[in-house]
Image (cartoon, rainbow, N blue to C red; front, side, top):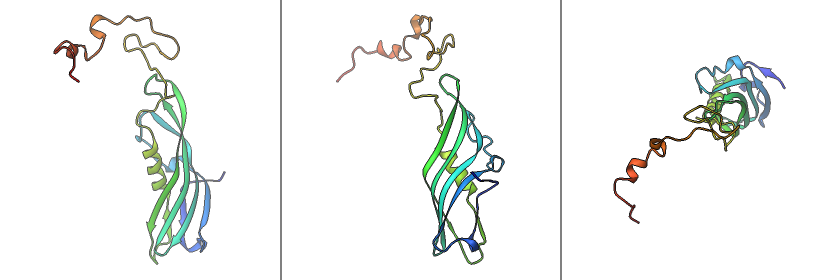
Length: 165
């Protein structure tokens, strides 16, 4: 797969019927610093897009993806997550003076928007025990809940009897 610093389209060289581009961007060009604290990018964005000029617009459609090394927000395990946008779409207004269009910022934005706010290693992750910190995915915790720890809503249950239906 071809790796390049940025995905830049040369308008003058673009085929009249449009062109397909595929490859991977250089990781340093993406500047994901501070995008999401629990996920770190691995490599560049992989893309397979179709670029077409229609009147005074440049339309881009296709598939983009990026691999991330993440920390599970429930159990703190490290795992890899591929974030993808299979319906990536962007359009740019172009004029007679437009020579080049850089698609990299739009691809970067689409990947950041597709990143989960709270990544989990798997949907049924049980997380960590709030008392001893044991990984509940590995084994059941031996902690016994204290009387006040039954439920954060326990005090409300004692206020007015049974709820009306």
